[in-house]
Image (cartoon, rainbow, N blue to C red; front, top):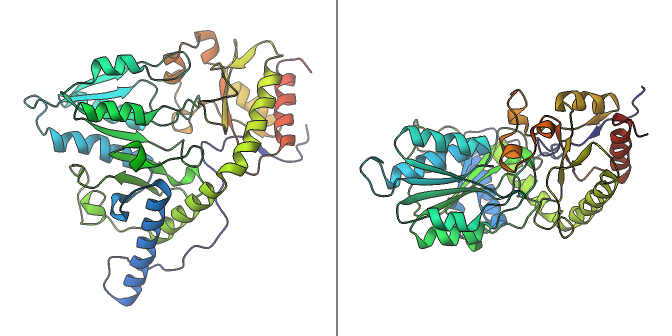
Amino acid sequence: MAISKTIFLDSLASASSSDFAVTDNFANPNSIHEAGRDAFAVMEAARENFAKLIGAKRPSEIIWTSGATEANNIAILGIPQAITPDPKRGQRNKIIVFEIEHESALLPAKHLAHEGYDVQILPTDRNGFAKLMKFVEICDDRTALVIMQHANTEIGSIQNVSEFCEIAHENGALFHCDCVGSFGQVPINVEKYGLDSASFSGHKFGAPKGIGALYLKANTPCKPIIFGGSQERELRPGTQSVALISAFAKAAEITKSNYDAVGKVYDEFTNLITAEIGKLDGVRLSVPFMDNKMGYLWNMMSLVFAERDSKNLILEYGKRGIIVAGGPACSSNSDEPSHVLQAIGVPENEINGAIRISFNPQTTREDIEAFINATKEILGEN
């Protein structure tokens, strides 16, 4: 089959990089000479701009990292150890995390369990939403940290983080939010939500790979887990990349400015796919959307095929020039079934046939129609 163009429907794994020259200043921003001071000024302007974009009160609350995995680890490991250095003797030794979190949040939490913390992994419902009453039952005055993903990048469910954060604070706990999937797709205001910390990943919204950010509210205790220098409040030592930082802030600005325009287009795409998939046998949405996809990310969809293998499906779509994912790219080399789909109760005969599609501003209606036609061909209905 001749392929006239490649249709990229895996933007949640990594968005296409924005095409702009940001800075040619290669000096070390920690040097005191003029070139270093110029680099420092560029870096701090980016810090100030991103802080404004997410509603942070102070630019100093932004810590540059290599990505969200590092940001999650710094917060999830550092905050509890600052609150309760000895979990076997301290009162606040409980950590609450939800079962559909990204592994860069789940695994640090599980590591804390080995260190003696009482780690509680809470369930979600069939639609991918955290169970509020269960959380109220478990969150108490022993809780040090609550960890919650704002939007799940595998099934798209968006949590009401401000409600959970308020309950955590009522019990004296701090609240960390993974905002990787939600930035640019959902309005974010860290101060309004009440967040104590939050993680962001640049390559998810058009910045180069290798740059991310941790929002750490002023006066939030956090013990360093990396050592070697005084940069980034001593929480992320090492020479900062001014070029990556500047690109991160610029891409974030562009992404947020496009929010309303792309949202309307993505809504049209999801409605079209939902309507057409509903007519086919052997494939369905992994979660039942309600109220026109209300409560879910509008730039992605998760589909499950009965008695199919996702790796074979990826190859079948690839033969037709369409790039799709079998789930998060971070777990694509694992043969283990998706812990997220297992958590929401997807049957075993469908979990292995899961794919995820996600859109970007360059995605067209013709691309979506091509995906639908390819799905029909793969299922033998075209």
